[in-house]
Length: 93
Image 1 (cartoon, rainbow, N blue to C red):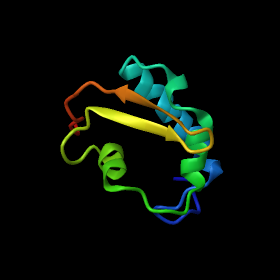
Image 2 (cartoon, rainbow, N blue to C red; image 1 turned 120 degrees about the vertical axis):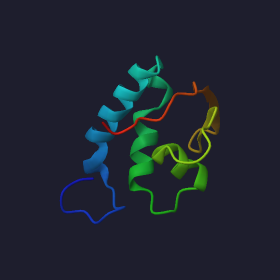
Image 3 (cartoon, helix red, strand yellow; image 1 turned 90 degrees about the vertical axis):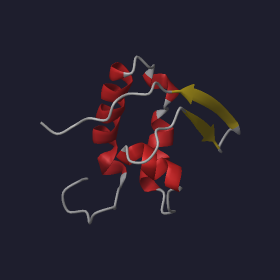
């Protein structure tokens, strides 16, 4: 979250942090960063709609683990399925 924002607020100013997180997660899971386009992340950051429960579970890591993601780009009407490995949740030290 960018300083000065209320909890839950996002903007394009948050994009560098989100891109860094994408890089770290993709490296950890041996995934290609190109599977999650910058434009998609930017649209998600500036979206004013609510996120579906599965998106919240995936981001928070709470609830049953997802085995895959369907990433759909409404701009070009294309989507892809990204299979994800099941990993143990991080435990605080």
